[in-house]
Amino acid sequence: MKNKERFFWIILSAFLIVFSMVSFFGPNLIAYQTNSETRAYLDKFEYLFQFLIDNYVDEVPVEDLYEGALKGLFESLDDPYSYYLTADDMEDMNDTTTGKFGGVGLYISKPAPGNTLEDPLDRFVQVVSPIEDTPAYRAGVHAGDYITKIEDESVVDLSIDEVVDRLRGHPGTDVLVSVLRGKDIEFEITLTRAIIEIPTVKEAMLPGNIGYLRIIQFTPFTAERVKEAIKYFDSNSYTSLIIDVRGNPGGLLDSVADIGDFFLSSGPIVSTKSRIRNENEVFRATRRVLVPENLPIAVLIDRGSASAAEILAGALKDTGRGTLIGETSFGKGSVQKVMGFHEGGLKLTIARYYTPADINIDKIGIEPDREVKEKELSDEETESLGRILKENLVSEFIESHPDANENAQRSFIRELKQDGIVLEDRIIEKLIRNEYNRNLDIPPVYDLDFDIILQEAVRMITTGEIKG
Image (cartoon, rainbow, N blue to C red; front, side, top):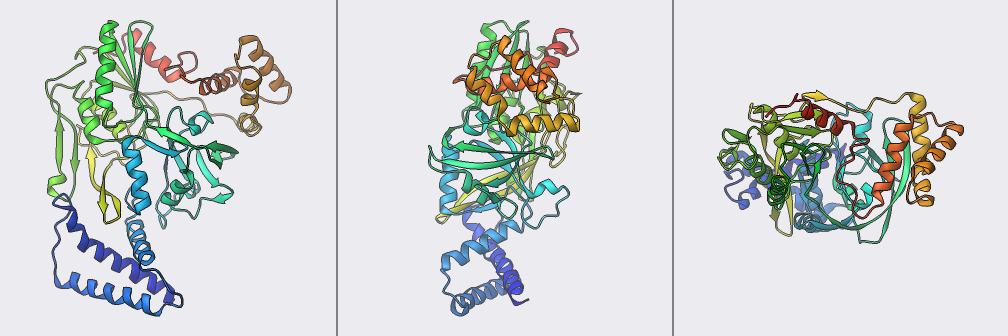
């Protein structure tokens, strides 16, 4: 009981001391006001902090006590996107901001400790999306997968910071990850860490003069890359556009607001609302439209589309500028700031964003205008898919048949079915195509043969169901 009481006072006191320190960050945060209640708690913190240093059975480094209290403080916010950053964490964050860091290439999410878990899978780490052309992507890790173990250590009791720390490391080193897909397909993957360079945009022309724009993430460079892509479409006389933000985990608010301005000529693109007055902001469209207003636009979304990707999708949907196709998006409707604090820093949710229709989609997501998704597998098909993944059957086939020609594929599929695999040919062919593409230095920008969401977008544009 005494240990619980001590923990409670550490967390409570840490909250108050950080409240007092937060004024150092300037007017963008809450103004610090000293009152009698605050002063009383600060006095308690000072007393308790010194008491622990003087009386705990073992000598405790002051820094460890301090950082432990701050981590507990942020975990008590019940917000997986707000957390304290140690000096090492801050260095990693800076690496991410510059676009390069050593790791496996995953965007992940996990509820904060102490949250009520509505789904047993929430004990694990959810993959929001892999970063394209990284070790995790090439190994076949998908949005919606769960990481259950890292190097045989369960992630259940690990914080999101601890998971990130275990996945990152020096390029060239290996990390063993256990992956859960669905409810009962579990397999292990050894990922070799690499320098992760965050990509932004890919573009191509589809048949029928359709421009295809894939936005992978919103960085300081994305708006300029989108502008270049639009020039490319112009030079190829495009008559319609598909914007693909599937698997896009988000990024910078300013970046997505700038990009939204390319498509909208007036009205709000996104607004942020906070209890802090100067964090309330409305990003409005100007008249600098780069894409003709009568040009048909389809937007592809899935459960890996999050944050800034949802801002763009929501803006185009609410204004009637684009038609959304795919699956309901991830549902991250909050805005964070990263700030330095002494040797470390913090990442704090300071506002929530709202679409032009004044809707916040946090934990809800954006529904598509036309839902399209792969059909659900039967139990028997799920078991077959699990076998293929666990035994690395497709990757072994690609290793022995690097050209993946049609005759070899047919022979391979026949062998699988003779060995008890009950999946449709199309599913196996798609697995082969994906594995083959992951092994290419420059994978194709799109796959019109197997991508049913992209197929539907092309069909709707071609038949005139999507109008400008």
